[in-house]
Length: 119
Length: 107
Image 1 (tube, rainbow over the protein chains, first blue to last red):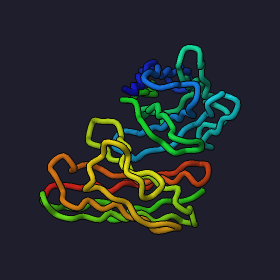
Image 2 (cartoon, chains in turn brown, blue):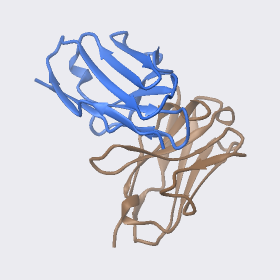
Image 3 (cartoon, chains in turn brown, cyan):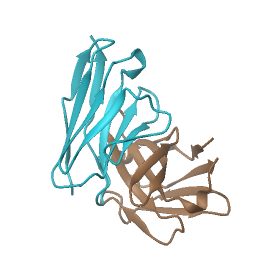
Image 4 (cartoon, rainbow over the protein chains, first blue to last red):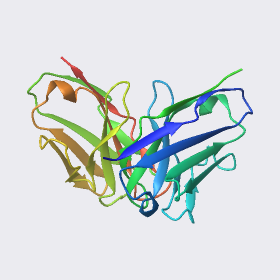
């Protein structure tokens, strides 16, 4: 059974940093691209960042480019999102998503982790 | 960026009704279109990919159609567990983009 378990969310002040993790199991993590999607409270879905299976290629939304970095550790079946220079508008639930095929064919979603940026 | 427009933004329907949700892309995306269901408080769930392919485990009352710029999701006989918000998403090009969602409510 595919499982994606996000962690690392919480309350952070504007300008601060957080590192999200997503522990994957139930599939061969190293052979699938992965994506982060976020959802602000009461709002729709917004793509954040994607990474191919090897980690050698990434793509980021303009809204986070230069501030967020997606990475992965295939030896530990874990996806990361390093978030720096956080803003109030980054407040959202962040979902880790397994891709069926690169690019962008989203398959299975984790339960999400809540990030709140506030002073 | 490719804009995805869903209509209607919400609808009221009864159990057993046939409902059709539409999604329009701002440019040709061939069949690189997916549909997701989100129940309040839960993560989105994949229903349809490649415009018409049913995700494993999803009931056959769900079906997708369309190609190019115009797409639809049909629920042939609405069930109580289908009351949710539905999103379309294009994966023809980055940035990946989602429609604004259609909320299906109980009449």
